[in-house]
Length: 131
Image 1: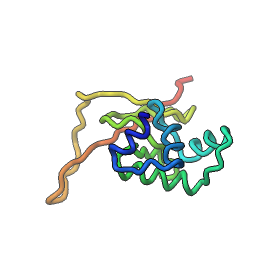
Image 2: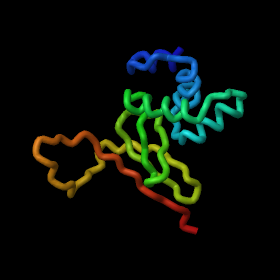
Image 3: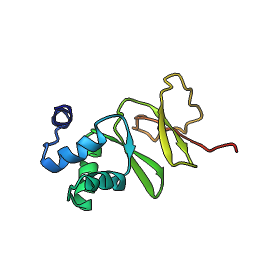
């Protein structure tokens, strides 16, 4: 099973609850909040607790199974696409869409503190309808 293999490859013990969360989030490339995952699971009759969903997502994020994307200080979504990429965020629909741009020049970054190396730059371009 692909989800189980992904969890094992990242050092995550595939408990039944983790598998359930993984089946929702990792079944295809997607962006979901913890509450969306919880709603999806409960719609299928699953009685998983909210705390279990949040704890599982925190573990997945720490182990590199998913990426956390902070839309704003109060909204965090989990991204099942792990390769480096950026996002469009539609403020009308609250939809997050991936875009690859390996040649996107990002300049003007501040000087890094001594002893630090740049790990990544995550770009969210906020868009809305022009109507």
